[in-house]
Image (cartoon, rainbow, N blue to C red; front, side, top):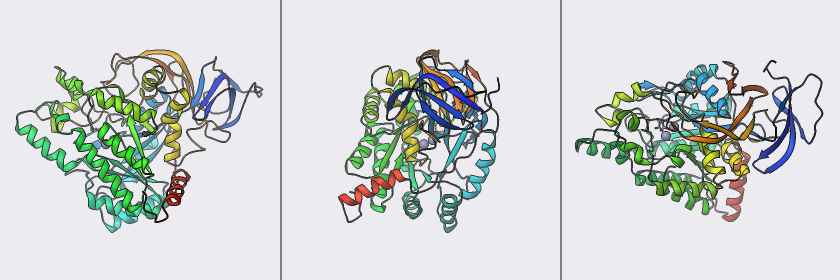
Length: 484
Ligand code: URP
Ligand code: ZN
Ligand code: ZN
């Protein structure tokens, strides 16, 4: 039977959304959801997928990926086709990737380049655009991107000095412009000056291996930058999204701001929840280097804080920062940890690892799982109603989620284009039996059915109603308009 979109009835499942659960069938017509209800009739010619009592959930949204990213002298090995295919195998149907302009490159030019690379994507994607320098031209490009190209989020790397780092001056210019456009600012929060100084100091002390990486990026470095970005956003009155919150220090800054009524959203990476910093002490250099990413893995105390932050709603989204560098690529830093390309993979494993460690342990309900794997990202990045939900008229990005599906994660069997998996040997219970991307079955019975180039670029308008609602609430509390 063809797997192209036609009419499909998903029968006999429990529909789980961020709002609750109910026994219901889901009828898909073409690329969208046509009906949801008990005992729906099978239309003539429809394909029937028997959910067999499993769950039916929205396709996952990974709000933080880096397919084929040129970075640290190399290029991430996962491209938009292999990456979005691996995503489908894990139940993720939309990835928000990052356009990062190269040295002297204009944001608009970089965006066009990334659009070209992404044409091979198998599932849908959208772009945040990084602001790495400032000029009138950059300001104009932000406007063009926001008004003509559906970019409603701009990224600021507060680390990676002498490469893509945005200093405070850039943050201020860009945050102001984002406010005028009704766009969302996002930050990689690490104090880049401090990281640079600590790296030098640690290297000079003779620590050249991967164990030097976490030493140069302690939690305080992240906490300081998160707090600084939050306060700049507060003063300028712009919503902020903190990517890959990895430690209690940054979480506290986010929590405090949210408790004060500021529009601050934050993301956690699955790997920061389940892997601790002992990986950097591995006797095998390749193993330790395979875990070099920024911010680095933290101690178990920080992990526990992150779980609490996720449960309490202080962290709203879960991502992967999927950025693949294989063993050979990592070896560029064999004699100097500063040269190990930063990044780890996981787009295929995000949902299953979170289900296993989050839902099966009782930390999250199935509805909370849906909220943090898709719905909240759809709300924050202004896709709600189209993505991250099961509703009539929404895109038919759906997953039949089998809570009993068992898999032992391994680089030997995964679909990601990398010879390393940070979850190697981890057994996870719960996973996608069937994945549909805009009505097309892309993963079924352990088999990928993705089609190169079928993924579509998704426009995201500015002024998300979700932020506006918060802004109105805040201004009611404090008519001066300062978000406190
Ligand atoms: O180590 C990481 N996270 N690499 C990708 C770039 C970034 O900082 O997000
Ligand atoms: Zn980052
Ligand atoms: Zn990243």
